[in-house]
Amino acid sequence: MSAETPARPPSVDALARSLRSSGLPHPILVDIARAAIADGDVESAAARAEEFRRTLLTPIVNATGVLLHTNLGRAPVAHAQPARAQTVEFDLATGQRGSRQRAVGQLFARLCGAEDAIVVNNNASAVLLVLAALAAGRDVAVSRGESVEIGGAFRVPEVMEQSGARLLDVGTTNRTRLADYERALVRPGADVALVMKVHPSNYRVEGFVEDTSVAELATLDVPVVADIGSGLLDASVPWLQGAPPAWLHGEPAAVQSIAAGADIITFSGDKLLGGPQAGIVAGRRELVQRCAKHPLARALRCGGLVLAALQETALAYLDGRAATDVAFWRMAGTSVDQLRRRAEQIVADAGIGRVVDTEALPGAGSAPGVTMPSVGIALDGDVLDRLRAGDPPVIARTRDGMTTLDLRSVDPSDDPIVTAALDGLSNA
Ligand SMILES: *Cc1c(COP(=O)(O)O)cnc(C)c1O
Image (cartoon, rainbow, N blue to C red):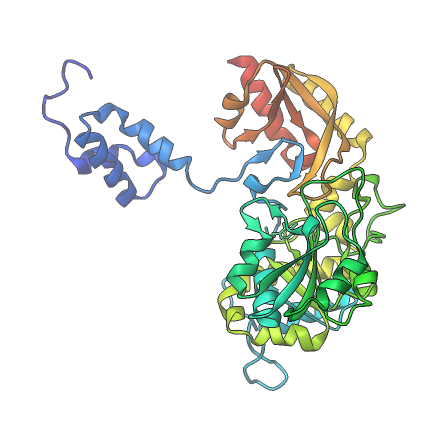
């Protein structure tokens, strides 16, 4: 503090008002001012306000090369709607109350080749609901190799426990055959309501391994639930030109799982589907409707914002616009040549960095161990903090003492932001 500063601290209100340029609302600034004064550290008030501002949900440029970055909200979704009432639970034909599942349910049923579908808050909710509605108090047969933990504390045995269903372990960690399931179904005391197949999304077991396909499981006498996780709609990816990209190999898909005989499938809305956070339950109408009517469905339902964004996503696929209108597929479908041209332009404009070949990742635990060829800009040293301090922040990654900005996860309209961020580094 300067010599003129009075010994008495400023009033809370005066200090709060002096922080107005932070853009934060007055009641928050009052809290910050009060805390700074109480700590006898009035001079830190502006820094505290800035620190608070940076805790708010903030749009960033994802230059990590991880397209579905769980910490960055997985699939980026554009969605706009005016503050206008919509037919969330209203039937236009009758003027009576309708179902919030109807619009989006019928679209996802069509997309999956299933009789019916409903949507809930996320895939963890979808699995919980399916188990609670179809297997509470009964056994669910799961391969020991699929009793997995998927990031963010989704653990099959624990979800099972919460649902009230009992986990019935089948086979071994590395090999589980149809005969193992057959034996489990007739185990003394067993009361098997479902067989559940879980895609071990974020890891891969190699070597002496064997699992049982949905088609084989469908020969059993009990309904088959397949948690396919990532939400790839169709393994033949008809919305992209040419053959399915190599990095998708082995990823289970909705259409093929239903066609192979799954009675129910569940998947996320914000992984390979490229939509908002949601969980989709699709399959046989009678089973889907039992899920829809279970009391938990009310607790796990989506709001109108998510329903509208999901509907937009579903319509983009059905209209054949997914390659351009679903941000994830736009990023995944960009050619290496296009990425290289953008990188060269940015480096030329910013006068810093060099163009390098990189490997991008689908992310969100989809397609583990596979990469997509990509192009980025490499900078010497670790400058992650400085890029993150920018406005808007740019999130990159480091390797071998170098910082890399991967362009596959950056929307081309954000290239000027990347250029300005690099320019800022060279001028610092
Ligand atoms: C990602 C995933 C989940 C959890 O889905 P959320 O949408 O994150 O709740 C569950 N099961 C599988 C197989 C997954 O890949």
